[in-house]
Image 1 (tube, rainbow, N blue to C red):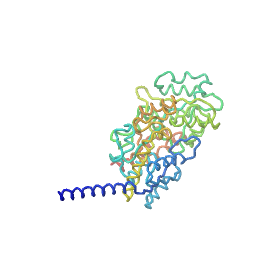
Image 2: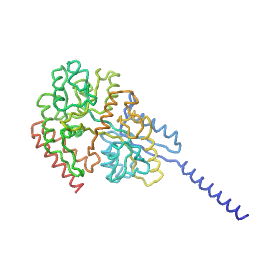
Image 3: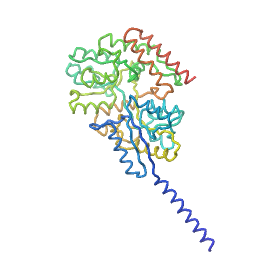
Length: 436
């Protein structure tokens, strides 16, 4: 009997000891650093304000965790991250897009795998490929922007050309001839150009490539190891881009203009159609108009035009959270839990630079704000997005060959065919190196 009591006492003491260790572990003070690019759209708030609000909420729920926020700029941020990695001073958490998180940081071995905290069955399928490297998840996706055509509906109303827009079609689909006819209809509007092109840098380069894809060309070979845009459909797409300038349908200076320049022209009512229009522009424009920083006009969204028999294609611009490697396993685990908390927080999609939620069941920005136009853009992006190569190894270098060739075509230095062939040749040298 005494032996049984002794064994029972030992068992109780062991349980107490185990629970005490668990409690101590749970209560261990953890200090984390979060580096964040301005990935949230918060009307009237400076960058970092909403991020700090999120931190405050998390720290209240997890008093043993202290998180220090540092905002990064897109100009100096990537260099700062590279220096931090090289000197062993990387932060614990970073929020960015998969071009840098996956194609760069994950491929260099700087990030930890996230499969242990991600339930892929709860994530929209279209988000998973851009979150992976080598078959493993390295980014917890938050949300995505949908690229589409943005149109100043008011300009078409004033030009008595509203019938040129496919507003009566449920999917608002149109072909390239119909699209050009719409541009022609507003060509004579005073103080406004029909649309704009840009070739000043690689920003927004995805859109001009999407034009070629919507003519029926394919960006990649089936095994994703080679660029294959220089086919008959691709050449036709390049000729079409050049024709917009030849016909006087674009604002001047497209050879050196940037994507930002084009968006500025649209927001200020200087062009009627924006070929690079992400879904988050809708709340941004409404806020600008409310503050008197942009003229009053109605923004409506449309899919990209496509050739007969070709389903309109677009791409998603994603935001996600990753965790850097760290010798302190407790910090890694705590950082992963914070990353997970961020991504499943109900209001984060409504605030993020992306209106489509990665997590199934979370409301989209359009649903939260009750905006039918935004919901149209979200539905188009969710249904028509294709892989754009953002997580391909060496993709950052591949992109650098695109805009100089578009520039050369627009200035007449190269023919559309030459420009496309030169891009593909240069791009595939990079692809061969990374994917022999």
